[in-house]
Length: 154
Image (tube, rainbow, N blue to C red; front, side):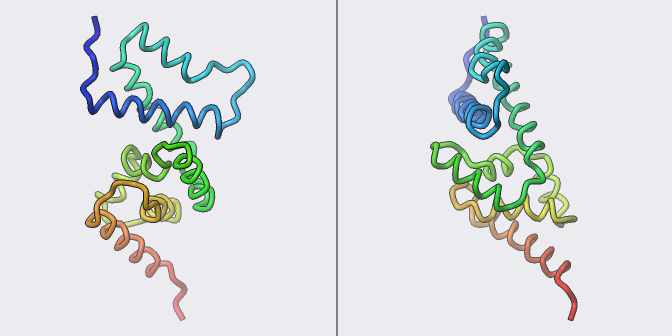
């Protein structure tokens, strides 16, 4: 019999499930015969347990983040607003938490291109996320340095 999830993992499960379900039904245009996220998740839970379903949700989040990695910042802001209106975590917040690209940029301490710039910019401008002032200041320094480096020289 599978063990139940800890309270923290159960909250993560609920949050990711709600995000992926909203994305797959409201943002992405589902194909007529494609299975619904709820059905897929129920099947995984029945066959393998909630822990494996949580792993699957994390993979789905990574796929969504990858799929949306190159969208313009205006579209990120629009999606963030839609998720927040639905009472969900924003795309920018999930990018901050789950994106390997985000973690790699922060570890490197330098933004290399516009894609990385807009990823961090989305996180910084999203006031709904739960990053602390120290992390927000670090990200702003990275943004400022990149803006200074790519600014046209007069």
